[in-house]
Length: 294
Image (cartoon, rainbow, N blue to C red; front, side, top):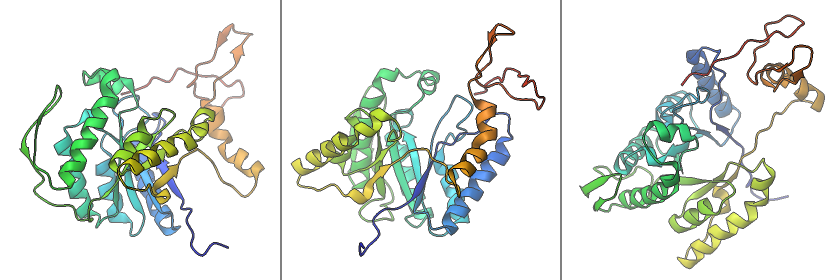
């Protein structure tokens, strides 16, 4: 038996919420979830940022974390993730330091390029530029957290003798992490800037197959700078549902599956049901189209 437990459990909350439910109640349910996770000794929870699509309703996960931290005592709370191309790097660094203080070091900060092209399009950002902007922002943020004064101009932000007016509460800096999926981009940046990795595609075949390769890239990049990657900061995320038995788990998720499943082609009526058709309770399974918001 191992002397120390090295495997920790956490949750990744995008968060998905059907838009036929009250957003206020959805948010309150998420806060209650954080409280239960805290009581059950979960190590951490990550909360996402999205601005379109209607399902993932938090536009600034730092705000959610600030409230959740007041209702919990031990669980660490992370941004999963801040979409860096949408924000000025100095503003992100300032929010990191403030939340680091407010949570007494329990906040973690995950970075990503932004998942939804619709977010980028609303902001007038070319999705093809998002990865490069993320890398640029990570470089600036890590330097600011280290106490540097930066004067820099790019095609999307300007900084003139920019510095943080507070040093981080956590020494030498709060925990920073980057998303890693299938491509090698996240692994290379993790090794270069000493970041944790949040492998968000581990539940898919391609994402699972890339885990070893991307971790090795991070280790090689870190070794080139005289550092060693810490496996304690290597996170693997996949969706799952746990119940007492397999049959109970299937029964638990049946209502949601039947509500949101892709309905088969209805030959008697000559059409295919809408993916987001909502069952109205009658045996015929009558559906209506569910309009997205956001």
